[in-house]
Amino acid sequence: MKSDGSSRRPGKATVNFWVDVLIAMAFVVAGVSGIALLVMGSGGGYRGGRGAAGIREVLFLGRNAWRDLHDWSGIAMMAGVLGHLLLHARWIGCMARNLFRKPSSRRAVKDCPVEA
Image (cartoon, rainbow, N blue to C red; front, top):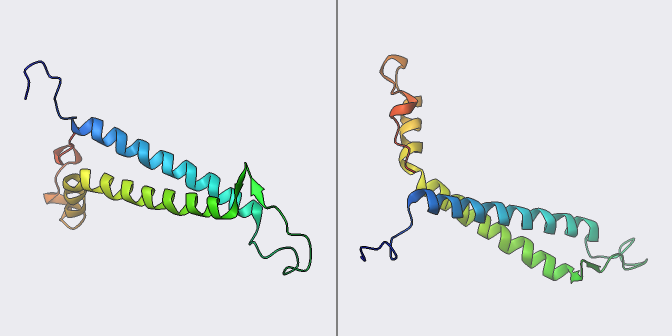
């Protein structure tokens, strides 16, 4: 490791921030794509295919593109949440153990490890 700090590893707070940014971005993409899919309908056409084809594109993207965006952003969101839970595993474990202890022997919330 260099002494000037140029090859420093990011701290836990920085990693946590970027994991949270990933979750937020994936949430927005999943939400927008979900609304687009809702607006486009089921894809079977109006009245079971007997009528007009309905909306074929939203914001220049077809149904398959929106479905792919929706699926992959959902996967990214799940990965981000899993990473977030792993980053906070010690704190979650401490708080969960406190739930099953007698009130007199519980640790104070401030005693559970918060890693920044």
